[in-house]
Length: 332
Ligand code: NAD
Picture (cartoon, rainbow, N blue to C red):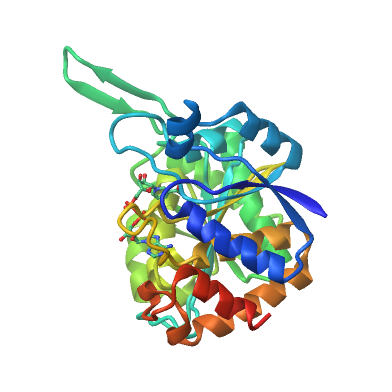
């Protein structure tokens, strides 16, 4: 039995977490949950945003599944997600985006995995405000080692999964220092993987290419802000944030998470779609080398998604969160 830290989160987090727990239990997955929350709800109940007990649980278990956490915009506390990623050096944000049968989108042939550097760049927290001059600086610092780690992770994934191509995304035409360092490291590391095609695109062209011909991309690797934006763009190509998985992976810890927010507009109504969290949980099972369980749950999920009537309202169905979960369970 593998013990995993479970962070239900805020808003719809606890509802989609219950659905995933029910599916795991019905599938007899050898995972036990150690539940520790973080975020707004935790702050309101115990006065701590990231309790010490959560940190201890993560340090012990090294693997977690996390629901969405509410973060105030432009004020209040620093994002819990960013804090956890930086504290545990979870430098790879891995975001698969694949077309799903039954989910209507403009394209029917998307299959990419984006590797976003998760701890540096514009998210380094290096922000200054000069009150007198009314000037605001946000420093996008990247390090050579940081570039090497995320680029290596992307090529290793491509190599392990038989992917044909890795595309680096940058702005080296304007960001002469940071862009050149990222691209230079990419071209250097690519030499270690002669069977994988390596190419690069400037971020603005990449956005245009993705919404015109997304099928040309396989593995994509980029810095933090570009990756944040591109990963949601890729999610949009395959049905939106409600259906895509995400993982934050470091050298010895991984946190798998629903990438959508806490959806305060529908929280408590029992209608949230648990697919994103379930797909992240399936990624987690692969990470734990529980392949058979991962494949079985994935097949049941795909069969359910193929029939709109069995899904939640955001996918065109009428099922509640738990009815949707039951529909998956009936196909295990
Ligand atoms: P959101 O993703 O919560 O909601 C956007 C829209 O998508 C809403 O209409 C919502 O109802 C819908 N939606 C989202 N997830 C859904 C699901 N599983 N099923 C059905 N519908 C779903 O984005 P937001 O409103 O911009 O953010 C709300 C809060 O979540 C903010 O505090 C934000 O900081 C936080 N947030 C957290 C994370 C995270 O923890 N990973 C990510 C993004 C936003």
